[in-house]
Amino acid sequence: MTPLLAVHGLCAAYRSLAVLSDVSIEVPHGGITTLLGANGAGKTTLLRAISNVLVRTTGEIIFDGKRIDGQPCDAIARAGIAHVPDGRGTFSQLTVEENLCLGAISRRDRRAWQRDMARMYEYFPRLHAYRRKPAGLMSGGEQQMLAIARALMLSPRLLMLDEPSFGLAPMVVRQIFDILRQINRERQLGVLLVEQNASLALELANNAYVMEAGRVTISGTASDLRGDERVRRAYLGHPEETTHA
Ligand code: ATP
Image 1: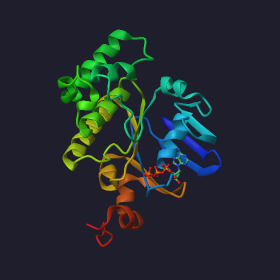
Image 2: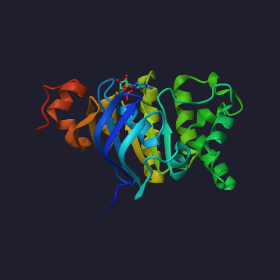
Image 3: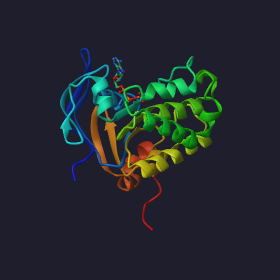
């Protein structure tokens, strides 16, 4: 089966600074793929390259069988790719409900998106409590939930998340990851997750890639990577344990 997203031989640069070199990754339909790597490895840049924001790219990006590289970012969003950037990108002066409406701005199916909004309040009940209040009044974890809910209001087939756990308490992160797992199952939603917490990311994901200095250096199933000595040493922090039963 062709993957939901396939990136082949991608190079990306900020003006004269080349960051990604010959990157190839895939996200299966309804699968969760995670990108691991140290700071500066190029994970955020890869998500930006797929969304076509801020970087110049060469190479192929194929979404659901169609080339999307070079298309404007709004066309890529309309094609079904939602991007929750690092720093979340919610509007703190607008109410929670206004933020959610903005997520659905390109949709014509008003009834369906109103149903989706009700569904978001079921996934994230705290958002309902704050629906008429400025988003900036909520905690960091609640704002991350809003950023995810707003992206889902696009009714995407691929959700790209950049460090959703950043700065959040472990309990809140666990809650967000549980909801992501539920949404992935219920909606057959493909997820491309950039995450510093490798242990948590490999628990959630089916497949994983490790990036170093703008290249993919290790790839495989999440369970392969959990057992890979290089990954254990660099990202999981417990190289001495073996994977043997
Ligand atoms: P982090 O977790 O630190 O964000 P990352 O793996 O996501 O790491 P990127 O943010 O993609 O890495 O950064 C890759 C390289 O691109 C770094 O050298 C960074 O300094 C550079 N870079 C990132 N954003 C820009 C930008 N807007 N303009 C110029 N260079 C940038």
